[in-house]
Image (cartoon, rainbow, N blue to C red; front, side, top):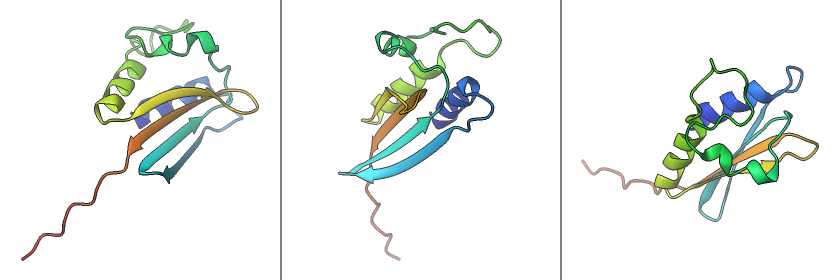
Length: 110
């Protein structure tokens, strides 16, 4: 999931503006934010990007099939998580990946 999200952000970000990846925990969840300064996605199109084979305006058909975000969201939801796009303050897109914190396994006794 992360490789796909970061790869998409890098592909759409201007070359002089690095992608920012941050992580935090709150209320039993881990939240990873992948922010770029690219063109962003119109609010009306944000759910559409998660449809299989959707390339939303891409003209380069050599970089993938348009399955990455559909697979990333499906895997995220299978792990009781969410994957949502938001505006990046100042322009661009931020993908927010939220997953429940894994419980630590009990220590093995010898």
